[in-house]
Amino acid sequence: MPRRHLLLAAAVVALLALLPLSGSTYLLYLFTQVLIFVLFATSLNLLIGYAGLVSFGHAAFFAIGGYGCAILLRSYGVPLLLAMPAALVMTAVFATLIGALCVRLTSYYFSMLTLAFGQLVWAVVFKWRSMTGGDDGFLRIVSPSWIDTPASFFLFTLVLVTLAMVALWIVAHSPLGRTLMAIRENQVRAGFLGVHTRRVQLVAFIIAGTFAGLAGALFALFNRSIFPDSAWWLQSAEVLIMVVLGGMNSFFGPAVGALTLILLGRLTLELTAFWPALLAIILIATLFFFPSGIAGLLKARGRR
Amino acid sequence: MLEVRELTKSFSGFTAVNQASLTVAEGDIHAVIGPNGAGKSTLFNLITGHLIPDSGEVTLKGERLTGLAPHAVVRRGLGRSFQRISVFLRMTVWENVQIALVAKDAREFCFWKPLQNEKEKIAQLLETVRLEEEAKVVAGELSYGKQKQLELALALAGEPRVLLLDEPTAGMSPRETEESILLITKIVKERGVTLLFTEHDMNMVFGIANRISVLHHGAVIASGTPDEVRGNHAVQEVYLGRPTH
Image (cartoon, rainbow over all chains, first blue to last red; front, side, top):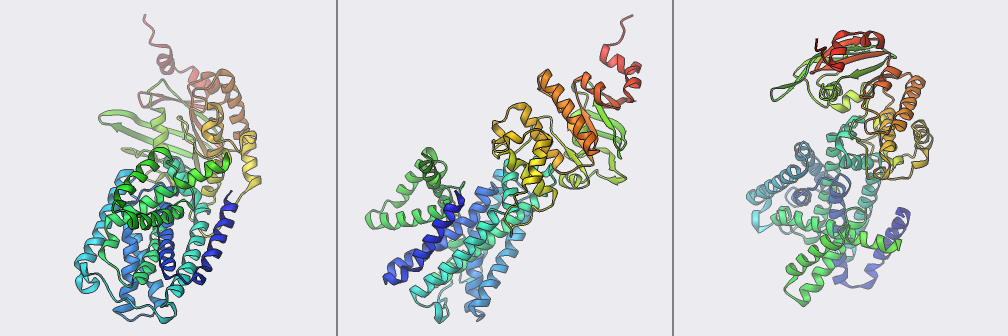
């Protein structure tokens, strides 16, 4: 089963690599955005699906990665190939500090604490005008010329997101990934097998945060600007919805969720002004009728 | 080997374990018995670090265990099973043992390599506890007795020097009880593991233990060979009631 998924994923990447041939700027923009959110949602699912840790503040790391990369690039003139890794290191450091406190708590308390830290990051970004531009946003981010066109930036994103997804796949199927699932199932038992449960959860938190940071950095470059909204709890909620809609019990579920949500959002915005209401209905239907998400639905189909 | 010194634990005024001491020598099969509510499970939870004692200490080969987190206690060579079954219910039997081996080899932080499928090691453990037929069954779908066997496999996977089994036959039918007694005795002797266990079934206790400690109201009132304990007046009073005349 997983091997079939990998083949399918490889085929999708190959097809996407041909997208610039279409010559459609609209499609290139659309799928650049989809790719960024595929990575963002998959990183969150390492926490939700594998570790059973429901984070309400994942956007904090998206924003830290985005602002970190943008500020280094524009304010300090650091070249992109240095600014991006540096932003990821910065995200990892913040994820370590925040995560070390969050994994001390479980269930609702963990969720509430991640929400609080998310809002704290938002507040700092909002208030620190001299560094971040505050609510005016951080604008005029200039990418180097080699990724300056829609096609080249799309390919740049495709390469990085593919590499990141491969890395996340390896993590999810490593001893750490399996240990996370065991802790989710029975934390006490895992501890009595000799697992340092909190530290394992912290490592997962750092990995998830860092990949969200990469998605954030790409997002800032893509929009050539970044706003405090990117750290706001609604951003965390949006990516959480992608995970739930796509299916958290499957590695590629959140990717499907990201694609579906963005495409549906685009389609309905052109047809109606009631997108938020439609989204609410879709979410309610998902939770009631197919709680394993779209991926779960496809899996059930396949078995029949 | 395992030394328990004057452990005390109170829960909001109720003293569950009171100055309990016992010594388990290497190779011993040591039973802790006592009426319901005598504090057997609490004593086990104190020894394994699941609960923190108010006072007293536990040492393993001279190394202090008290105050260590469960994972650190396990790393020092102590394995345990739970009275109420504690396995990974939504994983298969195979995956349960696999995760136990990952923990044993301290590979839980390894995120850059795929999970190894240690067929021989897992198969051997499953064979030891006689679950080789059920490898692909989800643990939650096993019968109660088989879940207990899986529980034992998880405790053994860590290759403990001292194994603590909390009521290994609780809830079993007489036949299952007898089978698991035979199985446990065999495993302990083959692997040279030191065993400390609690048990309500007196046939099992006097059948396999070479040392017995009796717990009553949280205190150890007797400790010795089965014959010594059987002949002890205090123990007879606890189990048979005080003579009325």
